[in-house]
Amino acid sequence: MIHSLKTQDIGPFPSMELTFGDRLNIITGDNGLGKSFLLDIIWWALTRKWPRDVNKRLTQGYMARPGKKRAGRIEFCLTTNAKAQVSYPSAFDYAGQAWTGRAGRPHNPGLVLYAMADGSFAVWDSARNYWKKKGDVDIQDRPPAYVFTPAEVWDGLVVEGVQHCNGLIRDWAGWQKEAGEPYRTLEQLLANLSPPDEPLAPGELTRISLDDVRDIPTVRMPYSEEPVPLVYASSSIRRVLSLAYLLVWSIEEHKRASELLNQPPANYVTFLIDEMEAHLHPRWQRSLMPSLLDAMSTLMANSAVQFILTTHSPLVLSSLEGVFDQRGNRDAWFDIDLTNGSARIERRPFEKRGSSANWLTSAAFDLRSDYSLPKEALWQRLDAAARNENLSESEARDLERQMHETLPELDPLWVRWRKFMRGKGWEA
Image 1 (cartoon, rainbow, N blue to C red):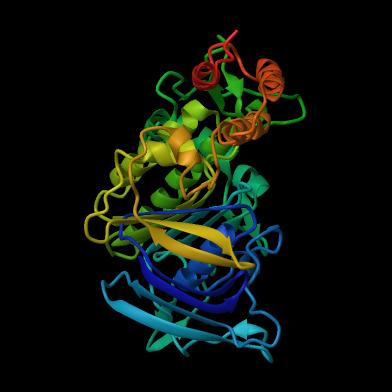
Image 2 (tube, rainbow, N blue to C red):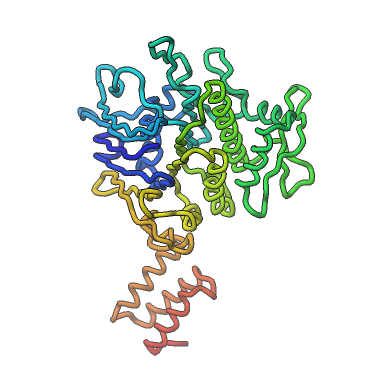
């Protein structure tokens, strides 16, 4: 679990200092201001590996670098799996092209999960990726992390000839045939993550080609009596199916490895999520994150779970109003803005706004209104006209014609306009 992060001269941030909530952390901001970049730094702080350093096939997750001729620093504080707080400073070594670190065994953060925006996924597991001892010597001969491209999520992860994960298609089919605990967990998780009126449920296994001997899982859809093979599912469905599978795989493998090592599961889980709402219909956007919070509390019932998520969706923010807790250090909202040509991140009070439209005009999105651009431009012209003491009736009628072209007859702006026209004595 990460408590604080401080950076200097890295990426879009001249400087940054954050104190995280112990449970739920939300990060908002415009495109290109560093939300995904920030999650990459947090992953590195917890695991000491950049995602793309582990898997060169990734198209994101590159090592953060300081600006030219700048020192560059990263400092963080976390609670280790042994429940000890650790502070850690690091500077960029230009000669070695790497971030400096203390010699010897690094900290153990517990279980760290990272769902990236493009469907890639990374897992750092205290039972499978941490250093082991041979006698009195620390040896890091385990994988540094499990980092999947979107294709590897489905088809399996192989590193240097070693099969680390069978992938969604084979594992799902195997779990379904065994009808054991992993499959029951997957069924329940899919039901929990589905929209209330469109539950996802597995169907029977099938074959899709004479040339493909795999048993392909299927999912039942509301528009079809026959279940749909997962490989034909939409982008949104595939994103949620991938998330559900990887959560089951990560947690099941962690629990099995913990048993082999004769140790309890991780005390802490940190879950980084980058724009989980991508591709999702609004009805799904407003239910997914509260469902995911509940699901993780069940899957890792004996562990403290910390979420750090980015979002562009006002529906995601409005959906979290019922679960966000500002008391103490449990939850936090951070917003990134462009100020004087530099990205600045600020912790803001999370105030309930009642609707997604109200969130659009909040500091999270900085829009003047939730109108379309033509309507917003018209609204500004009407506002200027109302303040213009020299406005002529012909100018007002011209604006009224633009209103007829842009607005529906029941738009609330008509009420204000007709009141304005009556006040001028120009009512038709």
